[in-house]
Image 1 (tube, rainbow, N blue to C red):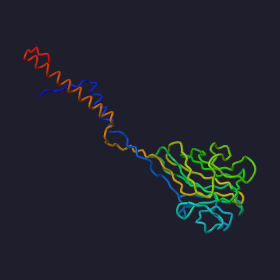
Image 2 (cartoon, rainbow, N blue to C red; image 1 turned 120 degrees about the vertical axis):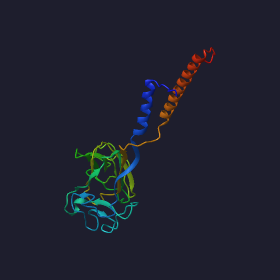
Image 3 (cartoon, one colour; image 1 turned 180 degrees about the vertical axis):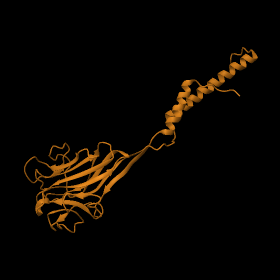
Image 4 (cartoon, helix red, strand yellow; image 1 turned 60 degrees about the vertical axis):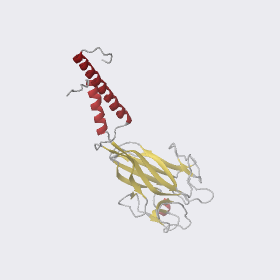
Length: 273
């Protein structure tokens, strides 16, 4: 039996093909990492508020609600399920106007390309939304307790004065300059930059007068799951082409070697040799 000799470079390419085809990491599509819709009471378990949730039954509140424990005049539309979280005139019942809602220790260790989504609305009084210059709601994150970074912020459309529409602050300068809020829930999305093990999301509210409000719902975090599990998968087109090329080279070597051997044996001068 004749053995086909493959040059060293062909050995190298063949080995590379086998290694890459067998050990390519398995990259999955975007996966849901975290979600919160406030359909059940998660305070103290899934999230924490800086003060106890409260409502005076009408216009001062900081609470998860289905509308039954706040003013019937408070109207927002398009929330998921039955409940959402809302805040208005937070200091109206003796609390400080600045309060927060935090989601801690979200495991992101196996994910990259993080995207946060939240649905937000604001009760429209018919003429404007009554936010003042000092009113805001911001979303911040930190990874592995490395310090918070703002990634989504809503401000009044002014640097001074009262009774302006709230809008997304696209450049974080304290003035709303983007999409405005209204009584219909809208979805806002933002990237979370960085990698690590545990993610905290902090929502800070500063709303200190009547008609200065916000409602949030349907918070989600998605990311690309990275698996280090060795997976045997079909080789890409490039490697199929490379394998074909190696086969042609090997076949050419075989034909050439066989032809020369036959020519020597028969002392032939055939032009094919």
